Length: 316
Image (cartoon, rainbow, N blue to C red; front, side, top):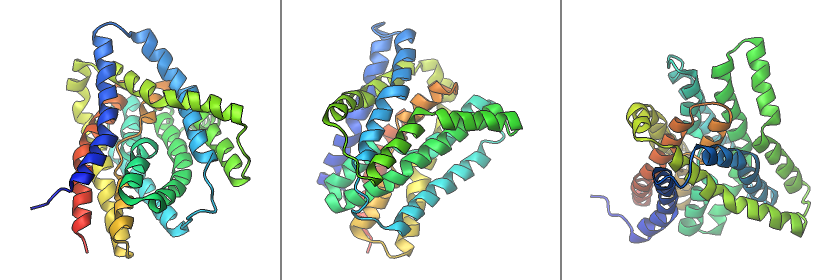
């Protein structure tokens, strides 16, 4: 029988449950008529154009690439993400609604590493493992945004020359991608962020999580859950089971054990990123399905994280 460490239980609960509560809060506010469709559309745009880019910029611009930098580890983590991404692309080809294909693809690979993953890694495994995961994050954020825009635009616009051109335009003008490029410039050249700008961005970044999660909760409907709940199961299984299990197997085979293996599991098994809903909504995809994926993976992550970390603790 698997014994669950109470410390692990506490940190997982502390990291995941507040996120889920904010989704419930958004749903409750919508049901009571406190927020409406106008608020949801405006807050989604604000998250996409301001709050989440500000958060991404601060996280990447402050990274010091002279810290722990293991290129083999970073490349393998990125390759696992790409493999799941391509496999999901093939799985959804026969799906009828093009507005749902990209949502499922993005939901299956894009993890909430900034909010949930790194926080759990720091609490469970300390600063060294956190620094290593932050290095991977610096490469994953650009990858997430480029692959995400492709997934959300290509099924809608198609593989025609005009469709590919439209997809490229969306990549070029995507606020998150532009922000990541600017942040990498600051990080690599070690340019300090002016205090006034840093404070301003911090205020915007503080809005990112609660605003996006309340919007997600407000976007959910009982009818949507009944009609689209089954579609949300595929990215949920991919994100919480297939990706982290594949990652643990790969890294176990190359010699990772203990804390290193736990870090890999938490990086790859984090619930679907909140920004996936924001981006799906902004690019005219099925925002309600994207909200369901975030909710399902966030709720499920409490169980899969406990089980996964407990199993890893027992591995030799």
